[in-house]
Length: 95
Image (cartoon, rainbow, N blue to C red; front, top):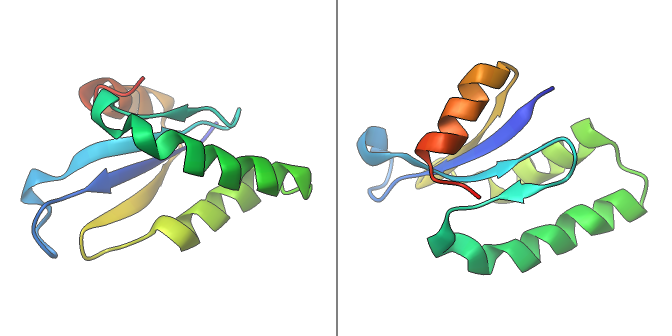
């Protein structure tokens, strides 16, 4: 089971303060920190639209990466190791 993790940082190309800002689970659930809750509705619309079109998990993750990948100030990472993904989610305070 892979988890798609989004990390963002405050200075262009400087990942020294990178923090996890979202996790996308294979179930379609979106985990966000409390201060990013405003992002939920837009992300859910994208995922639900893709599901309605019959796009599978890999396709949804690929689509999210193509839309939200911004290597200047953040990036998306597909994590296959469930223990590492769980650690990232907990450290990011995602709910």
